[in-house]
Image (tube, rainbow, N blue to C red):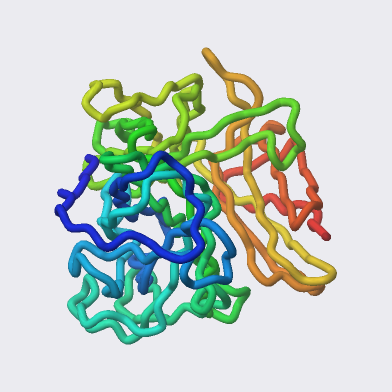
Length: 399
């Protein structure tokens, strides 16, 4: 399930300027790849990456202290921009961004530049790119442009240090989280790109893989699978933290990329289905271990207890975004606390408020906890019930 593209042997020149990376001299090679944490709501998300640079040390505003990562297509600078469909880069699929030779030493950060003009290729429907950055909603082929409020001029800074060792290959992965990066602004229908990117070390990467089936042993596609951690001593907002996200493919399979071994709570959910989870799951260091996690969901369209809805209104006095997390008790072996079944973020909420409504499996007894936050303020609704084909309306969240 994981596709590491072959690295071509091609290196750019070393950096200059008043850099101070330290090290014992000599050079090493840095390889960059791109992957994505998926979104279940869109058919395609296209983003044009113009170039990637690494900081060589010294003053950030000195252009001589940044070196460009040449792409594999050219082998030399300047970077050949490319328009990527992020939703094709899920479940461990990687797209090589570039390969370059760098002075051996420690580097504090890199920056990624989003392009303003697309490449000359076509999208998944065979249509030329009209825009550098755009989305295609499910069930359509229309290209809807995304506004990029920042990052095109000064670059998106990725402040994570990494080392390049002499005569060694360092492989880093830029994990572009589409679900958190692409925002639909209120009821306007407009999309905004505010990139959320994690830098992963390919050598230190760990994996959780598995599959999701329905109650008739058929593989389920399009299931949201998350790896989570629970911390009882954290604030309400941070008691449940989602560390990685995946969407099952046509075979019901998923792959989660993680920085640490674990243990994790692995949760699977799809609208109109039940949810399933396993607690205390450890990640492995390679995908050939044979260790898999199997989860099963009940089709609530045809089987009891059915599903209902939870909804209400959120408002932010001075304007802002609101994230709502729908949680359930974690019960069973190795389980404690709560798991997040699903979440949603509502963008550009004003003082008048915005409505929300989500599908959840029925629980007529007090069961769910709904946690909402905007900025540093958090509010909680506990003991929430869900009745079949009805909407449970919660008291407004006001921030």
